[in-house]
Length: 190
Figure 1 (cartoon, rainbow, N blue to C red):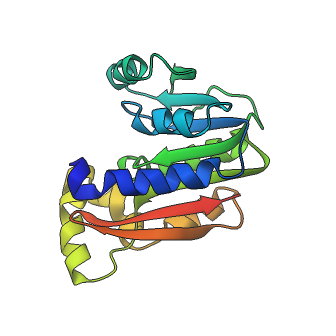
Figure 2: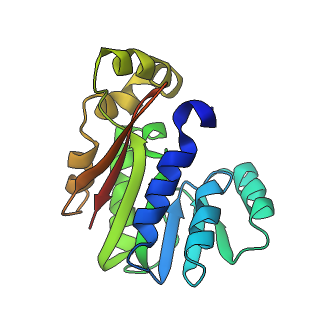
Figure 3: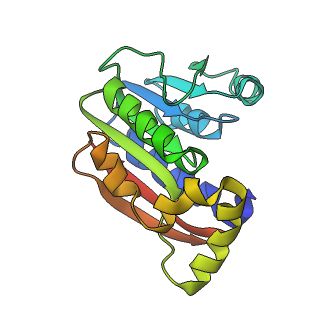
């Protein structure tokens, strides 16, 4: 699946954007098996990296993969982050939002806003509005797998507006990439 999604390309773009201002602390939400958190740790070795995921099995694999890196692995749901207010300089989430119901997605984004320090940055990589009929067709598989309700906002291009409604400002799509499964977008916000 990684090859069909150009995972390396969009992950590199997301990591580069996240570490460019040299944040002292980064939270990776929905870290799964840890690929992005590990890439963040490698790109920003002096930053404190915290990675959270609600799946204990995925988190155990992530911990094993990143055992030689200074990453704090924490079991938690995106909508209930175990961090204090204004705790981190940067929050990232890659291919998380389309797995969440609309209500849970909004709550998760509000939590990301809560833990982000003033002036901090959010970097999201997820499915965006398909750019042409071929991308609409490609995105059909994702919509079936993750549910039409969970992916409707993605298909309609509403994710930037939802991020803004969660309390973020300066929301902008910084990159779009065509994949065999649809259009991936990288969204940045403050």
